[in-house]
Image (cartoon, rainbow, N blue to C red):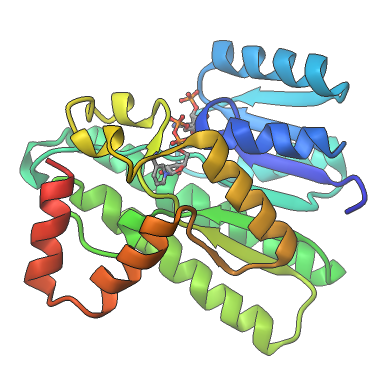
Amino acid sequence: MKPQNVLITGGSTGIGFELAKLFAADGHSLIIAALDDAYLKEAAIELEMRYDIEVTTWGMDLSQPNAGKLLYEKAKAAFGQIDILVNNAGFATYGYFESTNQERDLAMIRLNVETFYQLAHLCLQDMLARDEGRILNVASTAGMVPSPMFSTYAATKAFDLSLSKAIIHELRERKSKVKLSVLCPPATRSNFQQKAGMNKVSLFNTPLAMDADDVALAAYKGLQKGQTVIIPGWVSKICMPLLQRFFPDRLSLWIVSKMLS
Ligand SMILES: NC(=O)c1ccc[n+]([C@@H]2O[C@H](COP(=O)([O-])OP(=O)(O)OC[C@H]3O[C@@H](n4cnc5c(N)ncnc54)[C@H](OP(=O)(O)O)[C@@H]3O)[C@@H](O)[C@H]2O)c1
């Protein structure tokens, strides 16, 4: 792949940062946007020193209304065009539905749904006009089944997954050269669980959980192969479609609630 302009949301830590390293290693130009300036600066220094590329960073709260449009406009002004969008920034809230902080839930919905939608919508319009470009949308295996204790987060990821699959079909039907892949990571060790207050959730310490670099590598390879739905890890690849399609709802809800307690 020739060097491309890559916009990565949430590229400062976890899966997004591991993806940034892979793009950097292949000589692509990067813009990474995230909330915390300190993490961003650290990430940019590491990328620039290790891979000898230039990295543009923007610290901005992508859970604000219209943040997706603002980021898109800034990225276009800086890059001219966005060749690859990695729509990755996200966080979760955890607990019984009525017990979570409503403001935090609404910020999560704006980030995981509104900003996610807005960036994909705006970038796709440009990419279709050029008939080239790639989008990697980061959903979750949590988007495949309703998830007790993770109810609102899983619902946002169900939106991300459903939207992505429909767009993939629309692109395929029109034989577009623009490609969209959707990544469904399983439980992944990153800052995610601590931010969601899930430190005691044992799932992250079981063999079902993966490291962020392995998830990113599976995503990167999948993106290059034009894979549409990328589910890293053989356990999730087998178990999640089973839970989703063949198990009765009450059984899959029970299994997921045990995994998330
Ligand atoms: N870890 C898992 O178990 C798991 C499983 C399935 C899917 N996912 C999804 O994978 C994606 C990446 O998560 P991760 O595991 O890599 O978690 P992470 O290490 O916490 O990374 C999340 C990234 O999103 C950014 N972000 C969060 N809130 C933001 C905001 N309001 N404005 C701008 N940037 C914001 C973070 O920046 P700051 O650090 O500056 O806030 C960070 O760069 C998310 O969409 C998540 O839902 C994660």
